[in-house]
Image (cartoon, rainbow, N blue to C red):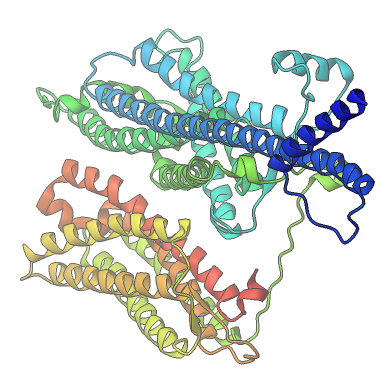
Length: 606
C-alpha cells in the first residue's frame, strides 16, 4: 500500500515538472493513460526543436565564418591585383625612362655605342620574345605528349592541377581595334622589318673588315629585334582580343614590358633617324669641302660628333647608299607599327588590370583540337550606295599620282624652282578642299541616323587624338614660318595650304568621333551619305600617299627650312610628320569602320 502511494507521488512530481516545461493541452478525453503517453512525446518534440535550433545556429555561425574568410580572401586578391597592376606600370615607366636616356646619350658619344647599351636593347627584345613564347606554350599550345605534360606539371608546383588549363577566351567587343587596324599593322610592320633587314645586310657587308663601321654585337641586336617584331605582329593580328584568365599577374608584367619596348623603339627611331639625317648633310658637306684645298668645315654641334664619321663610312658602301635613299620613307612605317602595337598591347593590359574579376566569374573555355582551335573570321562587303564615291575617289588618286610624278621630275631639274612649290601646294589645297566639302556633306546626310550616347571611347579614337597632335604641330610651325615670308608667293601658299589642312583635319576628327557611334534605325533601307564617306576614305588615302612621299621632302618645306634652319626643321619633321602620316592612315581605318557599320543596326553590327 505504501509502495503504491509512493509510486503515485513520484508520478505526480514528474507530471508537475513536465507541466512546467510544456503546458498540457486539455483534451476531451481525460483518461490518465492517454495523458501519460502524450507527455513523453511532447518532451521528445521539444528536444528535437532545441537540437534543430542549435544546429541552425551552428550552421549560421559556420556560414558567417566562411563568408568572412571568403571576404578576406577577396580583399587579399584585390590587393594583390592592385599591387601587381601598380608594379607593372612602374616597371614599364622605368624601362621607358632608361630607353629614352640611352637614346639621347648615343648622340653625345664620340665613340661607338657601348656594350651596355646593346645589352639593354637585347634585354627588352628578348623579354618580349620570352613572354610571347610563354603565351603560346602555356596558354595556346595543344597538348603534345605525356613527357611534356609531366614536365609542365612539375614546373607548375601544383601536382593536383592539370598540366594544361585552357583559361583563354576571346571577346567580340573590338576593344583593341578592328580588323583594318591590325591589317595596317601588318603593312607597317613589313616596312619596318625591311629597314631592319637593310641594317643587318649593311653589318654583313662590313663583316671581317678592319675598317668596319659597327660592332659585331649590333648584328645580334638587329636580328633579335626582327624576331620580336615578327612575333609581336603575329600575336597582335591573331590574339588581340584574347582574354588571359590565368597567370594574370605575370601577364600584366609581360604586356607592360611589350608596351614599354614599343615606346622605346618608337623614341629611338625618331632620335636616330633625326641624327642620321643631320649627319648625312654634314658628311656630304664635308666630303664636298675636302675636294677643295685649304678648306675646313666645323662640326654642327656635339649632337653630330659621333654620327658624322659613321655616316661617312656608311655612304661608301652599297647597302649604306640604299639605306640613305629608303630610310626617309621606311622609318615612318616603324614608328606607326610601334605606335599601333603599343596601343593594342596597352589596351590588353588595361582590360586585364581593371577586369581581374573575370578570373572568378568567367567560365574557362577549353581550346579545341585541330581546326576548332582557330577562330573563324568572315569578311563581308556590301558596296551598295558607294559606287559614285568609289570611282570619283579613284579619279582623284590617279590625279595625285600624276602630280607626284611631276613634282619629282621638277625637283630633279631645279629643286629651288617656284614650280615645285606651286605643284605641291596646289595639289594639297585641292585635296583638302574636296575632302572638306565631302566631310560637311556626309555629316549633313547622316544626321538622321541613330546616335549611341552610351558607347565608350575606343582605341581608334585615342589613336586619332594622338596622331592629330603631330599634324597640328606641323601645321602651326609651317604657318608661323610662312608668316615671316607673307610678302612672297611661296609664303602665302604655305599659309593657305596649312590652314586648309588644320581646318579639314579638325572637322574630320569631329565627324569621325560622331559617326563611329552612329547606327541605322530598325527597318531602315536607304544609306544616305555613304558615297561621300567612300570618297572621303579615298581622299585620306591620297593624303597619306602625299605625306609619305612628298611632305617629308626638303624641297616641299623650303620656307620652313629658310626660317628654322635645316637642323631644327629636321627635328620638327621627324617628330610631327610620322604622326601626321599615321593620322591619315588611321582616318582611313575609322572611315572603313563607319562605311561598314554606320548603316547597320546594332544587332546586325554585332
